[in-house]
Length: 231
Image 1 (cartoon, one colour):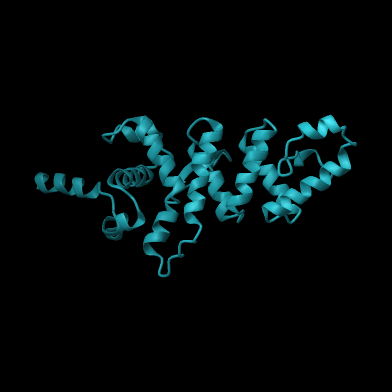
Image 2 (tube, helix red, strand yellow):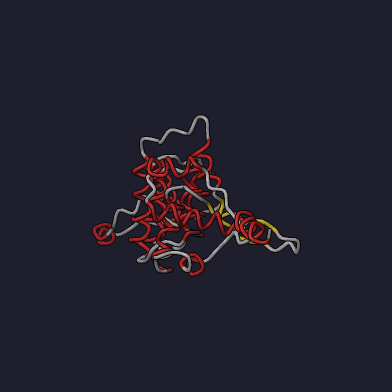
């Protein structure tokens, strides 16, 4: 009897893996490493750890923690998971990985079609990494996805806001987010509208320039400091 009980203990300590995930992960453009990382995140979640570190994940993988960090960034970039927050009993905010986007892609009866500019969206991430001079963190990638998906900002305006931040030497996500929110408040939806807003701002704030200044002038019609404009 003890022998059967020991096997039952083993079976009781199991994790449910959706068959559809194993059958269709390649259709989601996931590789085997990404699949195993997702399964490990799922396992950690069932064990009560919703936000395992790359080091914790790498302990159960054949890749390093640095490589694991790259995979996590890729999964968030591909919209296979998100970083969410909840409050514990002490009202302290905790982060956790949500696999809801993955489950939605697998189980949705009518999955959302890919937009025609999806590749354009993906090009935003390497552009940000180039300007920041480092890989983006999972939180930063999730922020860009929020701009694209939830706030429905166009890729062109996001890139314009990034260049604005570079020009103003304020290269941080908080500043870029405030630019995008200001543009949205003003109804700016195209790069051309952003250029026109910039011209109007400079005409109201700058005095007449000398000819020498005009000759040295650089076209910064897209990139003025929106945050210093009067409300």
